Length: 161
Image 1 (tube, rainbow, N blue to C red):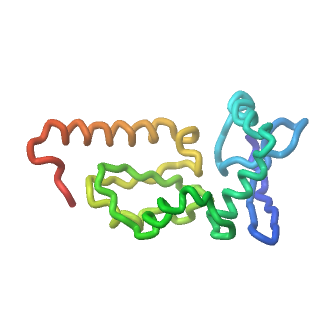
Image 2 (image 1 turned 60 degrees about the vertical axis):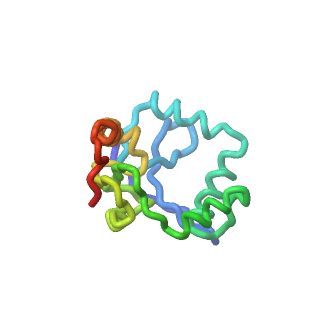
Image 3 (image 1 turned 120 degrees about the horizontal axis):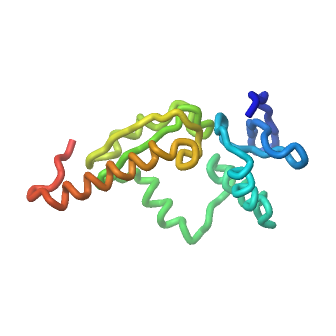
């Protein structure tokens, strides 16, 4: 993929930066910066664009993330619990993509929220870690699995920080 200029679309609610890529005979596609995807991967992803509510769902999601729109009322009790910022007690690996435009600077400052075993990793990827960095993503899953196996075979449980 040739290096494309970053462009943006600005509305009354938000500004979206993007890089155009995709087949030359169609609409430009907004995907995670730096993601070197092939035509087959694009074709599998593009199926989602055909859903009649795709644009409405995506715009609502971003508006909700930025606090500009209410979420699903059925999920509000969970949102209220999460707003209290409870600690995470289960073994966890957190991963940041070094070029993730949705979390500039990453999430390392959240480490204090993890009171069980925790590892924070930064990988060379954007926001779509399972596709952009599949080995790093799989390694994180295996690490957590190993911690759970260790816990099951340890009489006194896992060491806490």
